[in-house]
Length: 198
Image (cartoon, rainbow, N blue to C red):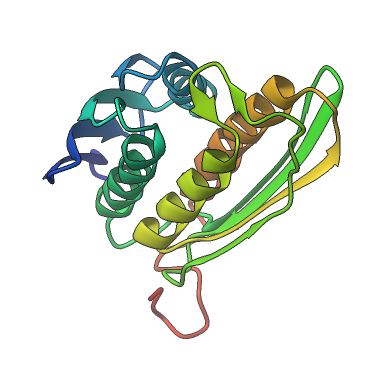
């Protein structure tokens, strides 16, 4: 049985002030306020579909644009995932999901290897959805993958509606992460021939 996997991170810069708390073994409850409505919707979807308990408050310079708020939230979320996952003993390590949402079909695969890498292939036809620039979707997942130390692949298999593509990516990421974090009684240490994940 894994210990309670919870982390709380605060990060304050001249551009953003972030407080984030995540429980990896939750029920999907979320309280999110970033000042960017569509981004809040995506983080709520992430929590709900990964069954993570997530509490996020962000005060960012959205009078400039959404960049710093979204990127810095990704950094903090990645740090929190990494801290809450602990030594990763007894977990599956790998996770994947092919998630449909209307016209969109998104493949997500990840490895909690400790080594960061992002391959992001979705393409968008509009500049923004709500108050969120579509180019910030990649920047968010880049920030999460690098601060969490995960190998993350997100590939678009189908889709034309940007809202659906983005939401499928967030939900698919949540499902794949939940799978990777799942305990497996057959794994007594870390799932690596090296004996360590770094």
